[in-house]
Length: 474
Image (tube, rainbow, N blue to C red; front, side):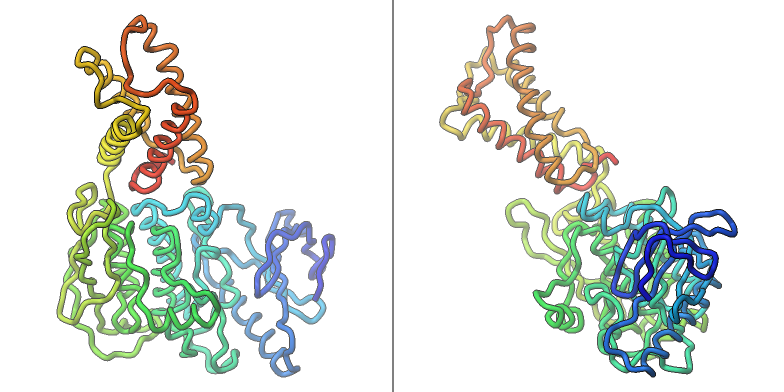
């Protein structure tokens, strides 16, 4: 089927404009002529090279899964209104949601705050619990398939979900459906889908949100698949209190992952307090993973041992995501706002973040003023020292306040331009007004050297804003 703008689907749904396209189909903004409302119309794209039998199986699977998704009624799941046929292919009519995808938010802002990620994860998990109870597995959870619209966190694209209780295999053995970086190892190995696979994908999605990048990388499709199946995730540096849960969700063995209830309890606790849950976890038993509609198997999710590698260059040491051995209990990584030692990557309170940035900005300013040969901050006459301390302290405090969640490149430019303007205002207005020009700043007044000073300082202040949790205000 090759739908075009203006086409009338099923005698009722008029296509208005193409708003999205993926490997499984195209999504149009449409208009329901009967109910006079806007809808999303998903046009299924048939893969090339299918035989007649494979084509029939493919269409059967899409239609069946759409009907299954239509039974779900949850604010965290896109509502399916209708399934119609157009030119021999199924078309899925859904609720039209206008929001920002989690992938777009990560691309714009980078790593998100730990507690915000926990809130998103808890909302996703509640929607998944409903789907799993109905026997539906998503199979393609990833940041692109999570929409944020006001207070709603919405999982999209159940169009490639799979009925967990299906008696007829509607996908060919070993066929890969999904995105490798967010697919569970067992799914990549061609094993039957199960709720535990969605929990792994949830962990991978939350990892990407809190770290700003996926847990696995590969230069090619095959390399990425091999990395997911055989290697451990990259050690997180920003996950803080989420780190034990991410480790548990991304355990290779599905039987050792937490249940949805355990994961939800942990996410709610992190979202509320910023601290990991203290809860004993039973020892795992070799029980097969089943749908959450059936009794949950006895299993365990176990905490990883924290890395004890020393910090290098001020960067917090990475925390291992390797699962610990059996018989252990879930322990927290660190309380929010109190990062110490090997747990420096934990969450920082807003006030603590301001203090850290102030100290960093003050140290950076004095280093620039003392080390660069054209400055003389370290040799300022003693009678001017209180004034210099007041000026540098105020300058550092202004740079320590939280900034909006801008794109990193925009934020860097704003920091540099802001500091240039602030310095010239202090030099040309504040100092003459308060001290009648009879003071020293310890910094060169040669224009080119002042610009270099402020480029270095603005970049350093930007790095502190970017790397210290709690630095972004919205």
